[in-house]
Image (cartoon, rainbow, N blue to C red; front, top):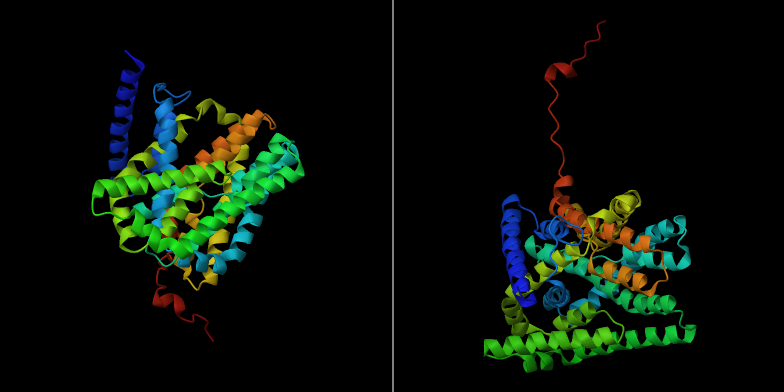
Length: 399
């Protein structure tokens, strides 16, 4: 059979399997993300059945999936709401960096990977997965919850922090001069600032340009704009996901509502591929040697993320159930962490075992995050106290 024939057969089998897993997840009341990840692990590199014909399509499809997830998340909020949220949550954002960067950096130093390894692992444990979180909040119907803007503001803070972190990381890995590193950081911040200004001042004009009564024209224009801005952002050392999110922020009113309706099926299709590809690229044999340290990081950073979200939500006057949902939603790690590990491994500047630890850690957090988010509120429900029999309260002291 030709390569294209093999690709079609494997792609059809993958999509059919995803449909089955999605149905199973719906019946047991969970997000399908953990099942997608485990399915990819089962059929991927080193799995029971290796699918080799999906490489080219799956890579670009997974990137499009992240872009669509963040674009749709941005459509839920206006630029004004974003700026307000950032002003209210900047202290929580700083706390997020301190609490969640430290465990990864500490473990890297303990394993003898030096300052460069600490910089890499700190970024991996710090950044939550905007893609997974966006999908989980959608699946659970929580986009309209009171705590969701708090979650969003923290995610945006993290994504903007990546606009500073990634240029610094690539500079350190490549051994570029300090001046060159400052230039890269300056460019990334300039790009983010320009897009935010355009979103705030010219959002209505952009919505008018993209909007169309013809659904086909509307979809092509919207999808093309998101990919174009995401690609330009990536070329400028800013995350493509951040670029797509800012496009969603810039679109407002009825245009945003129509965009959400038109893009929803497309988002679900490509987002599923992103999670499957993550599992496909993970070799199960690399997990056992680093599992102990991965579990240490899982426990530590689950606690620190929940603490971050709880504190941020409490500052906004949100009740205990909302605080628990906020912290739990931030637990998942995913696309950004894998990008960081990939950059480090490709540079040859870190120990290869770091990639195995990062992959194992992210896989565990990507599976654990949606589960914790689903059941976080139930953990706070008070246990029923059995009533004390009246006889137990009688004073039996005689005399």
